[in-house]
Image (cartoon, rainbow, N blue to C red; front, top):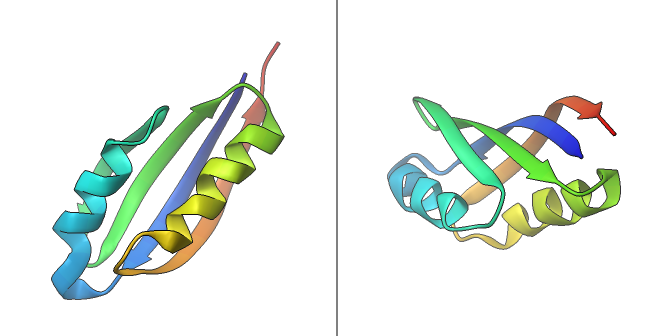
Length: 75
């Protein structure tokens, strides 16, 4: 199991739409909104799967940046 924490930056007018889009993804949870930034966690099978999910965030309209803060691998 891989648990990662990220900060996702958005265009200010798109923040709520991005939040809803991310929350619709399996294993993704949005914990907080700070201005145009979202604090997000991903729970995935392994680091590769977590990276795939996080990489998909850039395809969400309104996302301007994805920054990994923390990654923990548990067995």
